[in-house]
Each structure stands twice: as C-alpha cells, then as structure tokens.
Length: 198
Image (cartoon, rainbow, N blue to C red):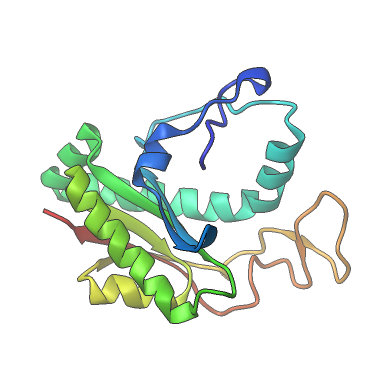
C-alpha cells in the first residue's frame, strides 16, 4: 500500500496518494495502529504489477483470494452505485471517493480503539475534500464504526459461499489453504459500506 507496486524493482517509489490519506496511532515513537487508505481506483483500472519481486510475490500469493473476493464486491457495488446515483458516479470519476482499505493494530492498542481509526479516516477525507468513503467491513468493529458514522450497507459478500482456496488439513508451501476450502471459518463476510462525507 505504501509503495507503488507498479514501479520497477530497482526504483521503487512511494505511493504518495496512500501516504497522504493513511493514518497512524503512535505510542512514543512506535506505530501501534493504522488506517491504510487510498483514492478508490476507477473500475476499469488495470495495473501491471512489478514482476520478480520476492516480497510482493509472497504477499500477493497470500492475499490473492481475499483481493479476489473484495475486488468482485467492489466492481459489482461501485457499478450499481454509479448507475443509480449520478452524484456518486461523478465523485468517483473526479477522484473524490476515498477507499478505507484496512485498519491494523498491535496488541498495545485496544480493539475498541480501532473505531477511532475509521472515524479519523472519515475526518481526514472531509479535510481532503472527498465526497464519499467506501469501506469493505470484514469484521464487527469496522462494521460497527460504519454504522455509527451513518454508513449505508450496499453489498454483502459471504466468506463461505464458494470454496475459493485449496482444501488441505495441513499448510502447503506457496499455497493458500483451509481445511474445508473456504476463505474463512467464520459464517460472515464483507459488508461494503458507503459513507457520505459532504
């Protein structure tokens, strides 16, 4: 998120868009929590990611099933929103739809404080002049924060609708697995929210 995955391996650039929108909670000099944010990319955006980068390849191999679920959810929901609501379509085209990608915290930050990262992200987007914020809430804390902030539930993508990973009782090298082939053992999923900021 914080570097540009399309830049060449010998000249990796910072992702200034994400850096300008993301937040961190510090304890002394240590980061104990953060919100990773970006401008919601256009639906037709295709990026050629850096090839042959061991770190990037390992991360993408691990998170690919999650990205596939969330990417399909985004595509379906954003298309429907853009057709039904011209104001959303125009904001998306103008680059004023923020995408709250993830909240991350260490054990030093209480779970309940993660709410502050979602609320602070909305405040940051307002400061930047964004009109809407889109969030894929995959846990109860993010969902509760979206509800408290007046978020509108737009689309639900269940974790256990389809077997999407390799079924294996034992972990396998270089392959995402689960005992039953589902993305998660939780009978939940990702609820996509939209929050109007302006």
